[in-house]
Every structure is written in structure tokens, then in C-alpha cells.
Image (cartoon, rainbow, N blue to C red; front, top):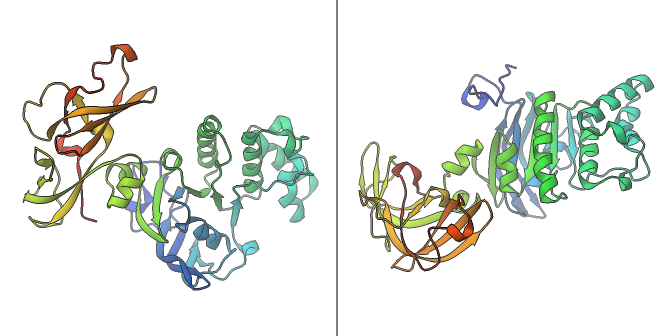
Amino acid sequence: MAKIDPKTSAQPWRHPEIEPYIRIDHVSKDFDGIPVLNNVSLSVYQGELFSLLGASGCGKTTLLRLLAGFETPSSGGIFIDGVDMTHIPPYERPVNMMFQSYALFPHMTVEQNVAFGLKQDGFKKNIIKKRVEGMLEMVGMEKYLKRRPSQLSGGQRQRVALARSLIKQPKLLLLDEPLGALDRQLREKAQFEIVNIQETLGVTFMMVTHDQEEAMTMSTRVCVMEEGRVRQVGTPTEVYEYPNSRMVADFLGEMNIFEGIITEEEASMTLVKCPGIESDFYISHAVEAPVGASVAVAIRPEKVIVTKDPHPLGRNCVRGVVDDIAYLGDVSIYHVVLPSGLKVLACMTNQVRLAERPINWEDEVYLYWRPENGVILTA
């Protein structure tokens, strides 16, 4: 199978001649008649770090368990490297899984935990020793060979679990909420460590997470799921900047969403009239919906500019009063109420000290945004 680095501009999912490494074909799964996955189809390419993102109960962990072989689909098929794995048992799949709990053996040392799979497979001691030492060095745990899991921090246990998952050189590693047990600072550090290890080894990773920031930081592509269905698949930039539905727009970070009606449409622009908004929305992209259709306009808070002066063109500009300000250190979130009562969120970098902030509570302000920063949603 042809290989293309998914981090480069030549992304394999944009090349129809390249076969996916994992193909999930119209898979459904129910438990006792209750549907958990509904007609899911996905393609994942060799060398990707692919994330399944969604709220609790959306089916993402069930999909991971189907890939591991711990569950069998109610219908549909699962193919890995062109081979039908739908009914193949877990121990015959080129797959390993790293569990959220890490599942380390408490009575074993770090060295013994990582070596366990190789010992079970009958590898010679000298080979086991060499591979274990190399893997622990890769994850930065070579100094902790003789420690037990109880003597390690959460971040250290996570790295040992990752080493144990990779020691048998799987073609596919499944990670179920791998950073969920870590505090924020450790989690941010571990994100980059996992990405670096994945890129070094070239192993395909599929990760389950409910953390949007984690998925956006680590992934080559993200699959957003809801109620057992795939809602959107794309690069982090695509799903964040160009959501295909209200659900995806609202799930990935903060979003201003305005309901409206298309009043004019051309090849490269669309005008939308939204009740409660003084100015028409001028959006610099076309949409597959006729004039008069009901749509929504989505604008990220960081795309909204706050000023005390009206925009000279008067386009994509509204006035309002600052109702609240959330100070987050590096940025502040401004809650601006329009004359109609609608509330708009704007995110601004804190470039000066708090006492020198030019815009404060109860100030009358103008909000505007560039035509390219609005996205029209029809679903």
C-alpha cells in the first residue's frame, strides 16, 4: 500500500488511489435492541493519529472496542490493511489497546509490566531486555525500571502504559481517553509526547476523547460523533473553521449562531438577514440553498472585533452594550447585548494590564467581523 505522510500537504485522504489502512463499512451495533452505533463508515490512513470526538454515550468507545475485537458489529464490516477483521478474535489482530485506567499490574515493576506481552509470546530474554530498554528510553522512563506503579505519578504511569501498548509493535494502537486521568498541566505536556512518539514510530493511532482541545492539538483528522452517528470528519482546521452543522459548530468551542434567511446569493457571496441584527450578514462564500431558505450564520468569538467606533462600511457591524467580561488571563470574553436582546460573544487578547483595558462593563461598543469569517449552516 502506498504511504504518504498525513502531516504533509499531500494528505492521503485527498488521494482516491490510496487505499485506507482501516475501513469501517456501514457498521451498526446495538445492545439488547438499543442502538449504539448507526451505519458508521470511516476510512483511516496509515500513519494517522485519528481522533473520535464526542460527548459521553455517543458510541466512540464502542467503535474502538469493535476495532479491537472485544465486540462484534450487529451489521457491517471492519477491514484492517485490506483484510476482513469483522469476526477475527482480538489476539489475531495487528492491534493493541491502551485503556483509560492504564491497567498496569500493581505487583510488577515498570520493566516487568512493559515486558509482559513479549514474555507471553516467548521472546528470548536478551531480545526482551533490549526492546524494553529502548521503549522505556523513548517514553522517558528508563530511570524507573524497578519501580512499581504505586511509586509513579499519573503522568509516569501513562507513559509506562503507552510503552507496554507499543512494545509488541502493533500496526494499530487504540487509545481510550489516554489523558483523562491527568491534570491540565500534565495533560498538555503528554499531548505533545504522544504525538512525537507516534510520528517517530509511524504507527497508526486511533484515539477516543471528549476533550475538544486534545483532539484539535493532537490529531491529523477528527471524527465528530453524536448519538452513534458520524457528524463530520476533517482536519482540526476544517471541523473548527468550517463546521457542517449547528451541532458541530456548537460542540467545538464557543460559537455565535444566528438564525436567518438568505436574501441574496451569487457565486462568491451570500447575504443573510437575521432577526434582531441591524446589519445584513455578508458572507464571502456561496451555499447550496436558495434565496428565502432558512439558515444559520456561525461566527467564532475570536473572529469578532470589538471597538468603540462604528465600522466605516457599516457591513457586518452591530452595536451593543458590554454586559459581562470573563477574564481568562491571556484573553477576555466580552458578553455584548444588542438592542434586540441578543447576546454576542467576542474574544480579545489581553495586550495591556487589566486597569488599562480600553473597554469595560456597560460601555457602548460596535462589533464587526470580516465576510470570510462567517459560516452559513444549512443543517
